[in-house]
Image (cartoon, rainbow, N blue to C red; front, side, top):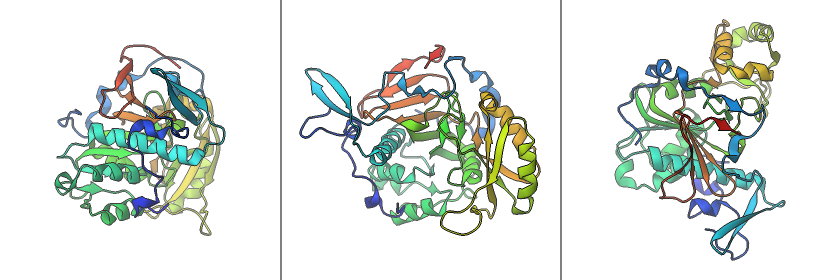
Length: 351
C-alpha cells in the first residue's frame, strides 16, 4: 500500500454502517485537555485491573453479540439481520474495519486546537482529518513516527511537526497488534515501537484504533509472533540468550527482512528480536515488561502497559466497540449518535 496517496485505500463508505457489505440494492441501515502527559498517569491507574470470567484466547468482541466473520446485512421490518458471507474479501473487510475505528476516534478525540500524532493507522486517520477542513488543519501540527507516515502527512498538505518542538502532544492515535481488556497492548509489528512509545508518553490522550481481530481478553491470544524487542546491534546475540533465560520464554529470534537480505533495521539503526512467551506470562504484562527492560542492550519493548486512554475496534457489522481506561465499554452504531453504554466502569465483565 502506498502511504502517500489516499486513493490507494479501499473504497470509502458514507457512514459507519456502510462498512458491512451490501446485498445488491438492500439498504443498510471531551476528552479533558488538561490531563498531563503519560508520565503523570501511571500512579493513578494501578487499580484499574478487572477480574474476568473468561478463558485465555477468547475474543472479547462479542459484548453485544457481534458476529466475528464477514457479514451481509439487510433490514427486515425495523430490525437488521446479518448473514455470514463466506466469499467476502477478508482483506477488504479488515481495512474497512480499521477505517471505522480511525474515523470514530478522530471524531471523538481530535479537536480543532489539537496537535496530532498518528502511527500505523495514519492513512485512515488522515483521511478523516482532511474531511474536517483546511481552516482547522492549517493550525495543527502532525508528528509522525515513521518515514511512511511522514510522506503521507506532507503529501496531503498537512504541517509536519517534531517531538523536539512539541514535547507535549494533545492526542496520539495509533494502531496496535493486540489489545487486552485492561488496554495493555502489544505494538512493534512495524518495528517503530520505540518512537511510538516516546510519543505515547508525551501525549495527553493516547488512543488505539484497530480492527476486530485485535480485541482480545488476554495478550498473546491473537498476536502469536511474540513481543517485539528493539535492541542495539552489538548486543543482540547476548540479549537473545538472556531473553530465553526468562521463565516462560518459548523462543527469541532476530527478525529478518522480507525484501532485503539480513535483519530488519529500525529507523533508530537497531535490530528487532521477537520474543514469544507462554500464556501464563501474559497474565501480568507489567511484570513481564519490567523483566525484559532490565536486560542490558535493550532499547525498548513493544509492551504498552497502563498507557492507553481508549481503544476503538471496528467490527464487521459496521459498529465500533469502544473500550475506555475506566473499564467502561460502549458501542457506536451510527455516526453522529452518542455511543451506547454496554458495561459500566464497576461492572464485572464476562466475555
